[in-house]
Image (tube, rainbow, N blue to C red; front, side, top):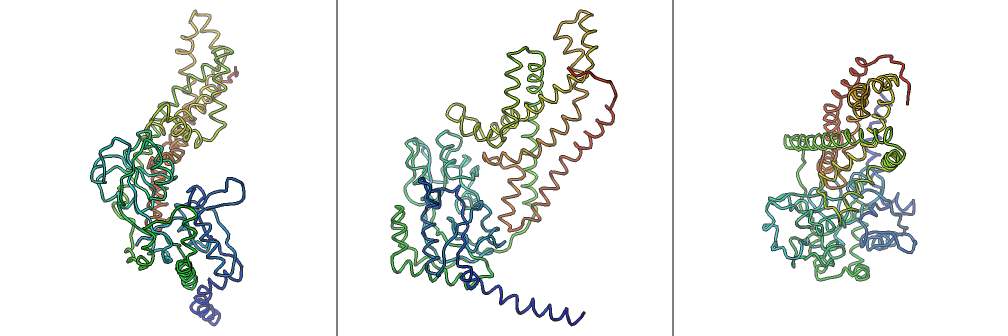
Length: 486
């Protein structure tokens, strides 16, 4: 047994590193270079060809050129942009190539290739705004993408940061006056923002940086091969041709050679007291949205239930239609429509849209809870109340509502717990609640375990007491009334 353990230890110590060092050989053996990107980022990076012939983009062409110079073919792997680096570390693809900015934080996690593009940070404001720099935006709401140099720049200024997942949405909200400015790479600004007649892009770059390909740290041979291929593309003009084909070649690209030197790596970061504070803030946002949304869902659901049960054919049909539509479509879609789709008509803030969206969605579920609770009240009580001369509204108020609410209370408590967790979806409309805070911290710290456990613990701390309350109510309110369903 000891001999076996010794042999196994020697294998791990000597043979495994050799295997990890053969990433390029393994790639060439497979005959393909897999590269990760996100189609949601859109043009000009990587996007679906409108004609239906696969994908296009300047990074698609760069990946194809790199693969050809390595003697293999290129294969695109779709992955969420915010998790490209963790997915690369997992081994989901060979390189990440999707507008990844060269930063010390990323260099602490992965190997970075030599640059293939120089970008400038562009500040966009509404026409008529006097702001011409970040210093002019003190206390204002400025939009950007998460995990970007622009985000890091905004952290150093006294502004309110609005984080987005897509590239077009920040400019959409700037037009609709939900934010006061947008700071993003000039590639994005030129395509999605500066061409809008309502917006003005401030001349000059707020800062400059470069895009690089990311490679796992255990693949230095692949990094050398990628660097050599990119260097050859710069020298023979292929990179310039690709960038010109997409209208991206400008004076900035003359800096490519000078920017090949790597910045120093950032020191390791940990889950500290500041992260705890941010997580608690995210929890408060989650609680605030959940309480406000349920305050909408509870009474509106009761109105729907009464309309469906006692409102006649027309009101019953309209109520049933509402319930089926909101229960039959994803709440995520409803949030998108409410926040982005209705913006030309109703300009709701992110918090208001999140609260209203969840409230309207859960009202459909509460309507069914209330309807079932009303139907559980024995029919005879209604008949007796009418015999005593009570009007229909008085029957509802004094006879049905008190008993129905008593019966519905455990289910309502359970629904509030579900709403508490579903509030994590509102991050798609820039609300930084608990789950969004967890994903930001996980990527920043390159650690999904600690932030994930902290997030789970806070959700548990918020939901467990309510779950226990629901169980206690169920036991206390349990009875056998032999109801006759209406």
